[in-house]
Figure 1 (cartoon, rainbow, N blue to C red):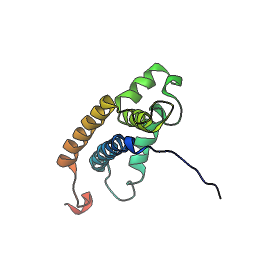
Figure 2 (figure 1 turned 135 degrees about the vertical axis):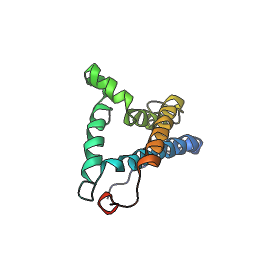
Figure 3 (figure 1 turned 30 degrees about the vertical axis):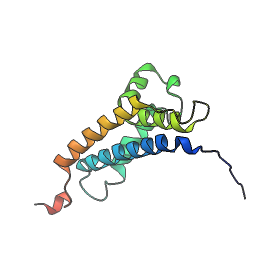
Figure 4 (figure 1 turned 180 degrees about the vertical axis):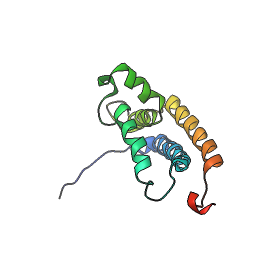
Length: 133
């Protein structure tokens, strides 16, 4: 059995919670908005994977953003994965100064949440498309 001991100061809990909640809200809104692209239950797993996995590669999740060509860096910076990764690193990584609040990244996530919510309210249907006719 391996035991991992990690120090998480209580003074950083609010910034960590705000960051986690804002990231969750943004991606939940975007996930519900993405249901407009899913036309049946067979496509349900494929559509999010086709969107999220490439975004993770260009957003610094699997390798540093600085190692990507500049064009891919710009694409990664536009979409919400990179701001979430940067915000989480700023509040959890002790080498970066854990607990540091990242308001710019949280504003970007808020904007993406608003876009996702706007699209979701217009396109989400609880009845599958083939059953609507």
